Length: 132
Image (tube, rainbow, N blue to C red; front, side, top):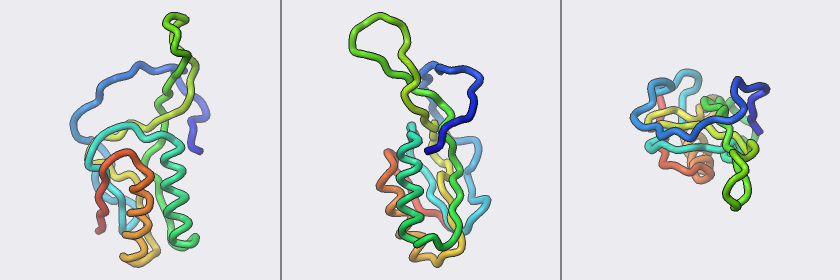
């Protein structure tokens, strides 16, 4: 799974992000892509599950680019109040609407569409298939 090697701050605040994505709005590497329509958090586990689904479907053919990286730490601790902020549990990537999440090239349109559909089922947000 994807995790940062080092982080500047061990624990982050929860912030309410809104608005459209400023970057990664168009395809930059491949001919086909998966674009988010809604915002939210995607965990490192969900990114890995989507990557595996795409890779397995195209049987290691073509090339896949992951355009997101989970760099925000999420903390958890027990249900008892007090004791401060919990330890880092996992990492997430903050996604805004309009961001390209995955790109693919080296496969035909039908293969890319089906692979992206399988990957979209692993993600917690609405997505749309885009092509050049």
